Length: 447
Image (tube, rainbow, N blue to C red):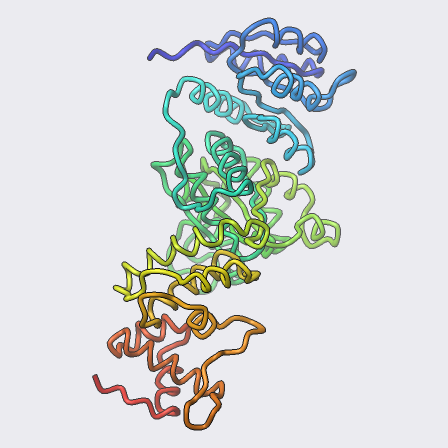
């Protein structure tokens, strides 16, 4: 199917913005119409058919959001709308997403950013493909359906996605889903855990360095931005970046130029940025811990992931999903949950969210020796808070914490054929600690 020549309507009360957009897009061969009057723009959009509408937020007589609602909610037009905004708010972005906005352009934007946003929107118009699933995100609750719908709409854009949610809710899964469904799906996805970066090496890790830039820099090295060039960079726990690095990060996002540590030259990069945090970044801005200008730059498209306790109907499907994965990986005897086990899984609050479910399912598949998982197995192997382990020594009538740990280690060693490295990794301890515990508990390691 031949692609259409895009017909674009620009609605913005700033003549300089309209003129600049018109000149840039006309050179690309698009047919451009524009108006500085929101009411007239509404009539033009309803009367004619446009592929894309560039819509300013702050306009007299009628705001861009009100106009967006009238077009998408009341008139239900299929045109892709790109919002043009200065420093907006998360509330505004959320409302715009609910109304079906396709993308956001933050002022001041470059000609490259404008052309890219329009090209992505037009590609979405020309693409005739069935609705693709998101297999890594399990669940059919209203929360999950809304999340998946948001991911599909965000994926086609190059706007910075700002993912929030409690620890363990699956922020990296969402970031990877956005990348897999987007135009950069065949390019690299580079995840960075900002909380694990050493403070004095943070800028080098992100932006790279040249040989001799600092003590120990024996050779030049690319940073995560250079590695992700052309693809997607995911900055997890971005709230852990220092104020000094935040200033450099802001400049990189604005200019798409990365200054290596120790060099006056910059590397041009083309990176789709996705960031995430489990903290209240707005509160950190208020307390001076996070730059306000950077906050607005990264919070273009906010995506909030609900904790698992707020969509309990997804607990069993998620648990079964990971149980099946670890049954195959560990060649486990486990096959199913008992009815009482499923009731317990549903009643538990899961403070660790999906990560806790995942870890619990792996422990069950490694350590449980029955085909059917019962509630007692979950309590014993799950290590839940505020729960009593219902396992008692038949001779003494009691079982101490030491007994529980000893039994846990013995089962893990047996499952991994007494391989110290694999067992230690599964238990979350180092090899030296495991050997110490084996000697302390006098555990026989003979096969």
